Image (cartoon, rainbow, N blue to C red):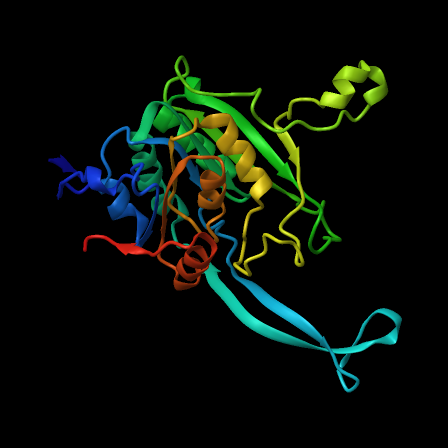
Length: 297
């Protein structure tokens, strides 16, 4: 029997871990109690994409357009059309004490990582530096592996400062001498100056660096679910491929649109997803064809 930070007794429950018979699990509720109930070292890769604490309400609409001679909108070649909003999803992205919210969840993720495991923490510029200090204290500075920059070009352009067009992903390993990382398995990128390398290298492409140029989920793309802040599969595919093996357990306690689980399934990994948003749960159930579970029953 273990204890939480307040001294309350916690019983670990190995049955919560995805198994070969039930490889993809989706839990409804606050992620902290469920993380506390999982057994030690039961996760090989943890990807945390918490709310960014922007102070704004995040909103994403799913729309469709129909040609309509009386429509209020005009498109290509003067065609009139009407826009229909099929669904809306939103949540308030604000916390009174963000560090107090995040710290116990990071501590549990650290406990859950296998000795060869890796944690990816996805944040924006508002909180990344505070989180880096906290993770150094939790893991140890020698366990810091990378600061990844995901750069994109979308959204409003600021006029009174440099436009912010990147997210930060902090990467920490449980044991700097034992962690798993497969650079040969990840997707490769075109050389920016292919004429400076051999034709063979140019054809193969180069290994990605710690700066990833990748578009967001496009409004008309096949991945689009309509969920606010949905992350593209390409970003998660690179993370899951590099830092887990086939059959490993991938944890996403802020599951959102279910991209982590979708990529894990496509790559032959197991997934454990947690969220308390009804919009998120419905999106994941539809996307993966699985049914949410509640804990405790």
